[in-house]
Length: 456
Ligand code: BES
Ligand code: ZN
Image 1 (cartoon, helix red, strand yellow):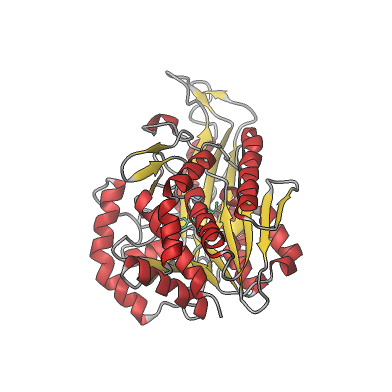
Image 2 (image 1 turned 30 degrees about the horizontal axis):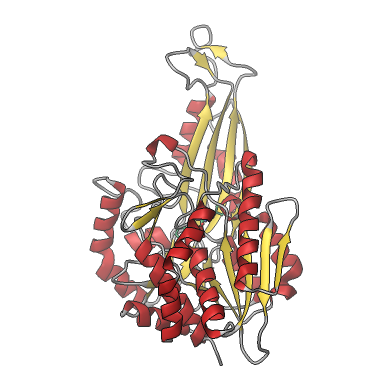
């Protein structure tokens, strides 16, 4: 990597960190409407930052949802164009009492930055912004043409960006896309991601009597929607971890021998790490499927929350009229969430105890993706990682979802490089989310190096 670039990044570590902290202070929680203004502020922060870097065209695109931030800097027709995507929205911070320091007052100890959004995804977006800035300030210009698309709804389904890509795909023409919103296997064994699962996020609403009832006067004959919901959920996925929705296991993702080998070699270490991170004594789920498989390509069905009845202090003897569960399914690439929604609806009707009405709502969905590990852009990413980390990356899959990835693949037809700098213990979406400072700075070097390798 060029010394001037590297030196610039070293000299500006403090400044880049300060800037990230100011971004992290904005509580841009996309799913909660009371934070609408904050989400917009976080978008404007990014808009200003892109202008400061020197992007000649920067735009805040506002529609019904949260704004998109779009910027482009086309410097040379003879060089390729890279489209960088990231998100500036964050997950809700609850449960607040489990945070050691407030989620929107970033706290730094010697190794990490603690804040909501630190790793997912503001810290990782900042890596790329800093790398772009380093090129402009130290080399005078960007090495390739760059388009930047940042959204503020990724954590809430990403409806606006999907509509934008579908409608204005031609504005996003590029040779490859870069997304930094995933994890690395570890600092000692960096990885590039070649697959993400899709997602279907639903609400299941069960209704019983027309109003809440006294459990003494009606208990024994009245329908109890909470109990019925629990029965339903346990019929959808039993104790052995198998999902009982006909059709759910039809699509499967081909896995190379090399990857299977790695899964095999890494199985024990992975299980050990997971047990430690979760603080549990055994893993649950389908015993006959490898742990890597269960995390990366196997469908899941998870309940995220259940609402209904009395949950206040003390006791209240009531049979509720309604219960609701938030349920998502993770799906392998090739499986179509809209089809799975129909299969789920059907299975729910079949398995629902009698005497209730039940409705399933589709809140959002996104396709999974399998990217090719063989193209010059992924090669450039692998070389940049090898240069900065001193070890060649392994190709891995992540069980999480980034819905835009599948759209870049299917609509823009461009290779996507999933080069993430998170670590598995960052605690994204949970309390005390963190981002490693070492990864923050190494990430900037890696992306700056990667950009240079893209030149023809
Ligand atoms: N950064 C994650 C995606 C991710 C998660 C990658 C875990 C690798 C491992 C992203 O911000 C995210 O959380 N996506 C959501 C998408 C959903 C709300 C449509 C997810 O996976 O839950
Ligand atoms: Zn996330």
